[in-house]
Length: 626
Image (cartoon, rainbow, N blue to C red; front, side, top):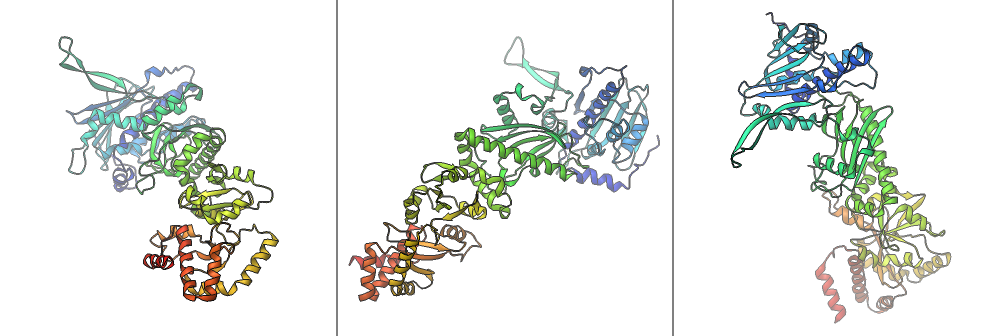
């Protein structure tokens, strides 16, 4: 027999495909099974166009057989088979696709999909095999042919004996090396694992002889082994079934079978889209956060299938980062794949799916917030931080998508509320959405800065997570209502009369405040009479973009050292402490400095900031006591 050369640019191309294109060797089985499925599809399509033919689904299957003694793995099908010319064209020319040609030649309708459109998956067999032998008998033909190749050196074709129509591919598995184990693909449990992982939803039975055992009739302690043919794949994926056929339990079982998580999801979303791009998706919102969620080890993404064949375990392009907690899968018949089936050729299609999925997730979360508040709160307490990161990240690019999903603790409602609910309750005269920051709801409730806002009867949102204020600063406003920190220098709450009174107080005590500012030096930007304090003697207010809470967050970052809020020390001129300040200013400068430092450190402690010099602070307290 004459050996023929591959009709490709060079041996290097085949070497590249064998050694570089696929990241995991196990995908060779996926590729060969997909090709077998294609071959059966072609028979089915012929029956649709030829009234003399019938298609009995029970007659069509794929068979996997491992022979450890011969060191071979055989994949056979009852599909359309190949003529000698087909073998030359499809297997003799690298990257020549018989499936794609069949689709073109028959002008097949768009809604009939054939998986293998790029024709190189077959060559993945050489990743695990020294020799590949293909026996095939074409539909309607009497003769069968055998194609054999040991790789890049070429191939041979000659007539052979084969009783049934279809194709039989036999791989002579490579010997194991120190680096690679090839014999694992002769182990029946490993083969079943690969089939379940990649080809569970191929629509034809994938059969295999499976070794089983049962107790002997006369002695239950001894077992006898026997071989039984089993169908390994489930064939009908859950996402192809009508939603009316499925129960919540079915969705939960699928979640657990696919190992999406060890918890029970709080929500499932089953969607089918039939438009410019067609796809089915089942998405899950977990009840608990993965232990590695905020680590570099966590991988976001959905399982991606092309017509029931797993293409990627995690396709990150299908989810935005702010919804990275979502688990599930997408199956599309319209996705075109490149030569490896592990990279998508048309980003536009994937982006369209991602856009639709993002919109669907948001809609479902909004419905949950509206109609199942308790469940949404459960979800938000676990993943609300991620939504806030989504608002803050990418320079606020996604804020419009996420703002309606945010919740914060309310001073009035004593529970989590949405921004829409806050705005709906705002009095007509309220101009801003007020918020306060702190380590806990209890500490925020005691902040001196909240007094004036509370006295006005306005609701305050409590921010207790480090990302809260960063997200809100990026949001800027909601429904045209600007956010305002209760510590801001100007709360916009004073009446004209109150403003005039504050200006008079500032003028009357200008020299006292100037002296206190001199004592504190560069610790504060200003010392002034407070317009917000009612019962407390002192507090900080801030000017500029950096608040005190943001300063604390930035100080914890390696590159955030030196970032400071522009603080003003506000003094309650109606508090009895102010009388002591005035007396000290008039009679004892040393005592004024002592009181000023104590009041400053009191404001520092209220904010949860570290005291600059604890020893000096305790000495100052002792001086007052003496």
